[in-house]
Length: 198
Image (tube, rainbow, N blue to C red; front, side, top):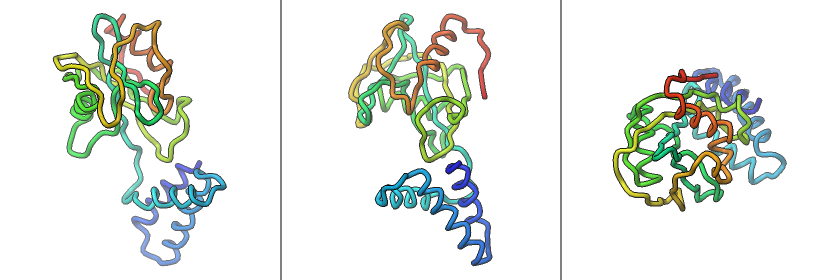
């Protein structure tokens, strides 16, 4: 609900011309910030600052993730932020296609060079049991072909490794869920599985 209220407020602040409407949309944004942040005043201020950075018509963000396999093992990276593992990826960049963004993310987070070859899934993050975040996001998961490179951690990751399906470590639920890992292995076993979406 807070995401939706903030989206309405952001869009209203973009297009409203009446000072009264601007005041009302600003108040809605403050309410959304307090809903997301909880009772701690410093968290409310942080959420309000985060929301204030949003300009224009509010739309979902795009999170791109890569399913990269080598000898039936899946590439995962360990996030520096929470110490758990995830499919390599992150936010799509302006000026890059989703495929270009996922290829860049894999290179930056793992050291490997890949080529996006198939869109496996387009999931609405809110329809899956991820922990909540302030923004609505779509998650695009690409099957990527491993071309070259060597494993190397980054400013965002501490480890890079390939895992068999029965050896998946603790996942960063903010980014990747166990059922999403099961789905990409299903796609590995059956390449004809159609793209899935919410």
